Length: 84
Image (cartoon, rainbow, N blue to C red; front, side, top):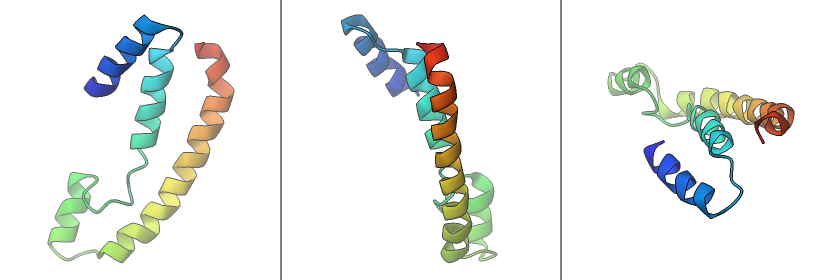
């Protein structure tokens, strides 16, 4: 987020750019990282102890990621006009 805010501030200074919209988009998309083995500490701990395998994370992460992307698109279609 600090990098996004820095780049966004520069773009705001150069012209029409909504920093709040960009931050919201990045936050929602980054939240969909469940397919990665070490996306959260509990996933990393469970994987390091051998409780779950990469294929288990990939299967559930693909489902959660797909749902997250669909929800993110729907959210921005609904709320983008309100932010600009």
